[in-house]
Length: 452
Image (cartoon, rainbow, N blue to C red):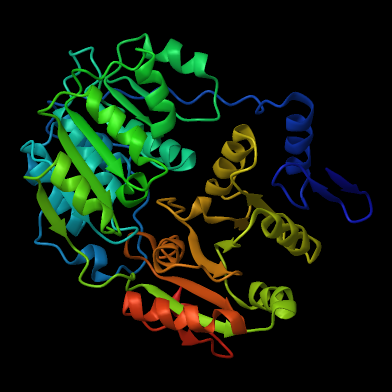
């Protein structure tokens, strides 16, 4: 922990400088209590009569997003959510979450999942994959059945929390119990929650495997399992836990795999577990059409100076800055903060409570800048984020694809800027070739219409 009275600089587990009084109070509160400040109780939900012919007019719908969208999400066959014969209570949750029309992956995947088909679906980052499996699995859940009916696996804790929020928002008018279980939290809390009648469990494979082995997570009758970011979940780090969970489930379970990238390892998994699944591939090209990609050729010692110039010139709503190591994340965050840009940082070696707090506050827009490792490359959806900066250029095409996919979410425009040193030049050419994309030299001035 650092404190400098003149500069007003404080750093509490991922928080940089604070130029406003409320956030000083928040940091002091956490430091003294290690608990979040008291939350204001939410307003009670207004019950809507689903038989009312004017039910749509009584929904609490968010303000319409009028930003330009690319055909990554608009190139559909013209379906709407009512086309899929979804329950009216589920439709209420869909519309109140701000969903208007299904994206291409939702339009193709929802009917297949509703028919009970196992599915291997590949679609670009930020094109609505979460809704593509959350909506139909919620439709198929029986609220009167007290057994676990849906198991959703995700590779990171932050992504599990985000996905759980989507499920809870979509099911706000349904009588369902949803439990989130991830590593880094108290095991006894999960045990208490799972003793209740639970229909949906969302979590990371390691924690769920532990609960299943102890007989606490009872999935012997669970017939739907989702692997989001399937390529990561089928890597050697996660595959044993995933297969253990599948062994607990019935043989006729429905298995849904969603990801933007499918490595060769998925082929052997498919042949063993879902040989007759439906395959949905919407990846005619790999990168999002709305993300403009640039590189800046710099010496290592000039990176911070170049970053400072970018942060001053660009019209940034929110920005993620990626580094390749934990130490560089913390050092860079402090340097940016001292230059006058209040910054959060996050990485996998931080305590889970602090990670959750920083993730939540950044999503709520309390800070414009976040420095992080690749823990934030998968699935994280920040609505206002329009700029990604690779301070350290990634080592693989898949990592690059997931990093830049944090901007330009759901067809909107975004910007990706890559700092390239002499050692990165070969890797830059390799990634351009693998992704069949072009990363252009950064111009003296970037047109704001490309990313705002």
